Image (cartoon, rainbow, N blue to C red; front, side):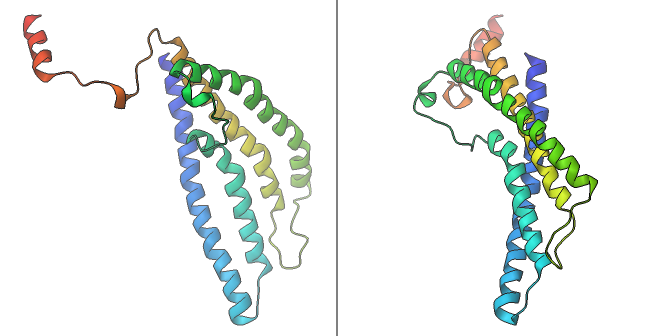
Amino acid sequence: MLPLVRIARQLDRLATSIGSLLGWFTLAMVLLQSAVVLLRYGFDGGSVALQDAVLYLHGAVLMLGLAYALHTDAHVRVDVFYRRMSARGRAWVNAVGTLVFLLPLCAFIILGSWHFTVASWAVREASSSAGGLPGIFLLKSLIPLSALTLGLQGIAQLCRALGELMQEESLPPARDRVPEEPLAKAVEEVGA
């Protein structure tokens, strides 16, 4: 069980790091969009490159945010039965759902977008707008990359679920455990 927990923690750290980076991307996106609005309505000007930068950041936040959403349990879940299940029941749902639905979907996205992304890299695809940013190929690379990060986070979820299922007796969450009495614990230690 311990190796599974370690793997899950390492993959969780990756998702947390990506989430922190996406927070900065979101701030940059808001500031750039504010600049676009200020240029357009305050100075009767504009910048296609700034608009493209907002779109690139938006794409990055949405695509790379998938793994972070799974990590923080912020994804859409049909919660009618799940919330009433025991910890082991939820672990079964997470394990089966990850193996049957999530990981095959991630593989399908990676395989389906691979040629699309490679073709974009081959020609170093750039914006078709005059004054637009180059690097559309980087944006298209986010499709298989997002599926990869989501798949890795799915593996972390699977490791946690398997760890739960391999335990002989499931411990209640920390908030539900009754703390030991300090005096009873001291008496036990002295008596032993």
